[in-house]
Amino acid sequence: MNFLEERIVKDGIVKEGNVLKVDSFLNHQMDIALFDEMGAEFKKRFADANINKIVTIEASGIGIACIVARHFNVPVVFAKKSKSINIDGDVYKAEVESFTHKCKNNVIVSRKFLGSDDHVLIIDDFLANGCALQGLISIVNEAGGTVEGIGIAVEKGFQNGGRIIRNLGFHLESLAIVESMDATSGEIVFRQQ
Image 1 (cartoon, helix red, strand yellow):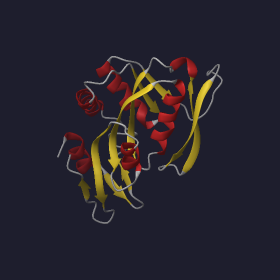
Image 2 (cartoon, helix red, strand yellow):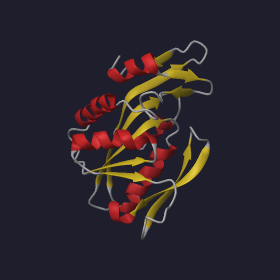
Image 3 (cartoon, one colour):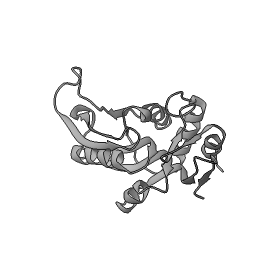
Image 4 (cartoon, helix red, strand yellow):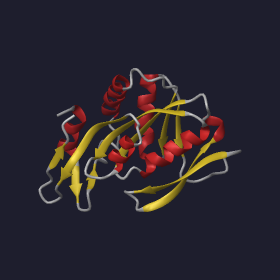
């Protein structure tokens, strides 16, 4: 069992509806020492990739992406879920469906922050059905950039997202892959990696 799996077993809570609550350390309150360990692990797993930008999606992926970016010494660009007055000019746009929030959002990235010279590592906290990743991949492709890899903190291996993304040919690394979880017993089974 790796460091993230151990932390999930210790502090994660399994809820009905295939929900894994990790808000005490990952996506509400953030354990920065844990994020730093995750950043080092992603740097190791993508050591051979030519990465000059980290891309994530608002909001839970931002904290992890920032720490990962420190390990790669590159900037972070995050896709916003709504256009605001401080985004000027043209944008790349994709529609994504959120498993957690049960809604669809148009996410946007300003064209001035993503282009054909960018070699991107996409980072996110969770992978369930893969819609958010597919949206980010389409934005990078529209910009003419290259997706060098995808790093996920927690993948729900019993849902289709990971299989879909891997079948598209992307280098996907998940630090913890949950094979099954039981809300009644609280048991979490991880895929051997």
